[in-house]
Length: 84
Image 1 (cartoon, helix red, strand yellow):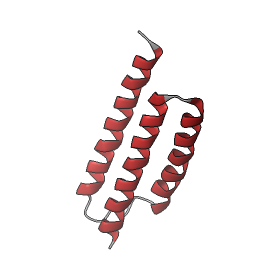
Image 2 (cartoon, helix red, strand yellow):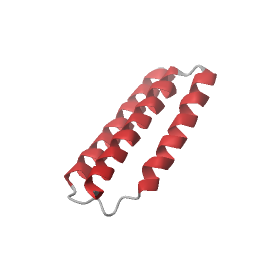
Image 3 (tube, one colour):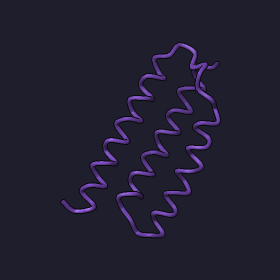
Image 4 (spheres, helix red, strand yellow):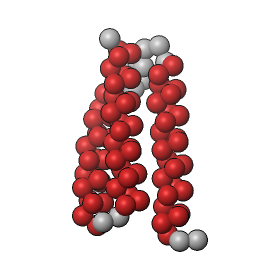
């Protein structure tokens, strides 16, 4: 099995896990247990990892980290709406 295949499989597992977490949070009526700093930190780290991966020309990590950044943005929006 090639290293890229392993990377894409790991990426898919991680993204499915994050999507499930966002789904769970969207069902929580008030999202009290979720810190706003969780998603802010995740967005900052993911942005850094996208740039880093781009500098290394590693498409597995560019795509994965861009998708993780998107999950952080969605998560932040879900929590912000719940806390209103």
